Image (cartoon, rainbow, N blue to C red; front, side, top):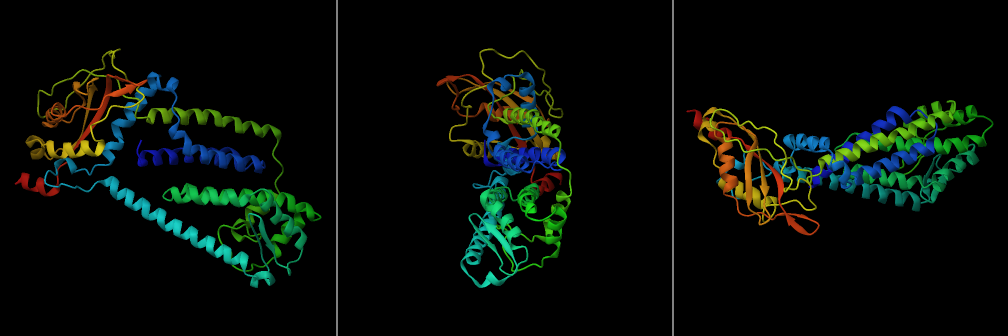
Length: 423
């Protein structure tokens, strides 16, 4: 599993957990449970991609879903520029995966710098005493401040103590780091806002008891003026952006006990995520199909579904691989693949999906076209696979075994070469 494959799964599961929260849980008054759900769901999203069930993997439907996923998305293909296979003159071609990695790292570095700046600003805010006369209140871990000139100071202090006692700042730091890792996903910013809102609900629930009524506490929130600027890492008592939902929640009737049953519905969602994680696993490979030679250079090869060979593994502990890794395989393909003339003349491009068996000695057998492209591309793919060196075989329980392997090969012409061919 490469980093892009992992990130895609993490953000898919983040969307699943957050969607569940928004649809079923957000309107409930079980604030502590909702806080725990967001924290646990976000953490699980990072671990689920590493969880695969052998029992789920053995299901036929899992293998079919895996085959469909890798028919349209294969981590290896994503890392190759579309015209890479046709670029025989380039020794070090540009890979799209490298471009994505650079963009991703630039985004992470920028947000890490911003996060470090916020921590420095927060340190100064806590250290300096000039703000003690300001009409503001905030908390960060075991530090909290309530301006001396604020009315109802005891109520506001009770509010900030809840943030300190329940370690709300740890949640904020956690979601800041999640946002840095997944900065391209807009949902993580909504999650950051929701976790802060839950913190305010929890603190308001305690602090409102210090006033004669919740209406009086709501008036306290309305009546105060904003003080000095803080940072995104603290919990300011007077937060204008969260004021309206806080007032609405104070007026809301507590949720009934029966509403707790909604939390049990997460188990089918989690089971679906586990199924997808197993289906995404590269260890689940499709069943073998018979080789069907492409007799016409104008038509793609067609295949049928045979009974699987019981002596060939579809699930292995360690997948078979090209000697030297994927990058070495791409270099081999770049030097070996020749763009078929019929495909070049017709300006045809796309993926040819191949399947084969990696024998115990690393040789390739039963090489076949799972889904062809035609115009000579299928024959070229078969020629290149037959010219490959011996692979590193798959391993099950420490022993080498025969195993199936899927390999899509991407054909696409350069625009310049297409123009030359059409003349």
